[in-house]
Image (cartoon, rainbow, N blue to C red; front, side, top):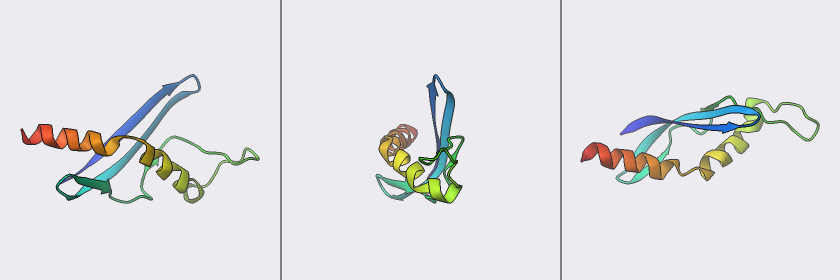
Length: 83
């Protein structure tokens, strides 16, 4: 199985979103299909206020993805689909 997940947030500063493809590696085990292909409108800046390049930001974006409960949500959706 494979798919895409989208996560959004609403804040005073505006709307933020992130999306990525996932793959099921084994029953109950899902992972990012490509950690460098997370799509987002989030822009990260360094201490000087300069916007990070996509490559520079990738580590931080992936840390955000890792902090989300997306794998549990994908598994829940897969179980619901099978039932």
